[in-house]
Amino acid sequence: MVQSTPLFDYHIGWKSKGKHPGRHKSNQRGMGIEFAGHTTLLSYPDPRRIDIRQSIRDPLGEIHVKIFNQRSATPVMIVCDLSASMNFGGKNKKINLAAEVAQSIAHSVIDRHDALGLIGFDDEIREDWLAPLSFRSQHALTLIHELKKFTSTDKSNRAIKDLYQYMPRERSLIFFISDFHMPEVELENCLSNLMRHHVVPVVLWDKKEYINLPDFGIVTITDPESGKKNTLFLRKELKEKIVDSFEKRRAVITKAFMNFDIPPFFVDDYFNATKMTEYFNQFVGA
Amino acid sequence: MTFSFPWVLWFIPLAFIPLFFKEASIQYYSWNEMIPKDRLSRIVAIILKFIATMILLAIIIGLSGPHSRQKEIEKTGIGAQIGLVLDRSASMDDPFAGNDQSKVGEMKSAAAARLITDFVKSRTNDMIGMVSFSNSGMYVLPLTDNKNAVISAVRATAGNALFQTNIGSGLTTGAELFNKVPDSGSRVMILLSDGAGRIDAATQEKIKDWLGRFKISLYWIVLRQPGGISIFNTSYKARDDEALPPQIELNEFFKTLHSPFQAYEAEDPKTLQKAIEDINQKEKKPIKYFEKIPGQDYSTHCFVVAALMMIGLLMLKLIEVRSWL
Image (cartoon, rainbow over all chains, first blue to last red; front, side):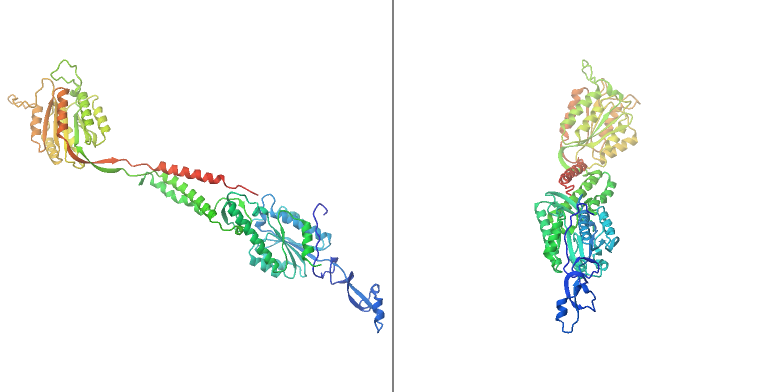
């Protein structure tokens, strides 16, 4: 568990309903420091919390008790896109990077004693890549370990529309790892179904997809999901167009996510855990 | 345009395989829809497939052996259609005696071949065919304007001779040369023989009929044996019941032909030359004839085109990106 997996710091912007003590704000009464209000000793018989000042002020002589909210654990789900497009990248495939990110998330979650679950999907929600939400995260960790050796074949990511059915009922933090190479409509449908959760989109793009393309030559590329083939005559002009197309796509994706008020987290060649911490500090109100 | 092996053309559909099959590629991308439409790339893709198809097409067509048909061009020239009917009987191998005994002779056949070769060379636009005869007529060469063939044929007759003299068969075979050949207006048959033979009545009728029908004028050059009877010797009287000598009888027969006839008698190469020159002088009329131009073979062109396109394809292959990942 220690290894050298980089950890990041995360928090949630709402009050967790989890009863399990943890590190996140919660609306559960308990041994916290967040003052929630007063009640009588009779209805909350905890003499340790008697508020003497409030009790003296009461003309009826009722004894008052302070109520605090405890800090609770929050469920965290990792959703990983297992479609064939994640195979891109030659030696250093996107799916490997996804595994790396997932591992960092998993260890950060374990560090904060939150519940962890993992779902992999391609054309269907993969039952064999499903680790139900649990405080004992071995299952998820095993899957993440296997993810490093995973190679998808010909599968698309159509099951994105069914994702919400597998999410916890209470509001959760969802790390969505994918390259988001999918039609916008599907993405928007998915996000609107996941609106009750807090989604953190981790967008995996490889620079070899656009900026680091070869400068000159003829190449026939195959779409791993549809099998469609295109012959490209790579040259400066076309490369500029491709880079341009990716920048536009970046804007489109960002806009789609921002419509749901969730800024995307782009990962280019490697995963920087510190950036993820910054992401939470910047975008998620404490 | 025709093909030597037309059945190979059945394989032409195979040439279009590259158009229907997808490019072989193991370069997986993430999402092809991210690639903007690019006209030049599309053109290159089409060119690649097109070149592959054209290479296969060129090879298949090349294998089928395309060639143009032989052409016949009508030409007009001065000359005649000449049928050479040469005697190949054993007596042609005797030396030319002539009156000049000092000359230890050139053989008659050799002299004839030499002089006729010169004759053939001097005629530019003639069509010449050849028949030789001994026991029977031997078809040697159809009427042709190919000088080399004629000269070779004439030279070939200078070899060893055979048997006897059957003029009738030689003449009928010679007349057949003109069958199925368009009449140029000037048709000549040169019969070169030593001595003569008798021709039976049926053959005589046939010769008379054919020569008349084909409008062939006949020149008869007799190589006279020393001391032999001249055909022009009209004073010759046969003894009582003996038949006329064959030469005279033949000459008499030829005179009855419906077509023009002229006889020459040669005793030595000089007189033979004179006779031939005389014929050369007489037969100069404009004639129409067809020249055959052989068809051209285009299969090499196809293979060269295929090879050039293969080089082009290889060049494009050189700038192919193998992997950038």
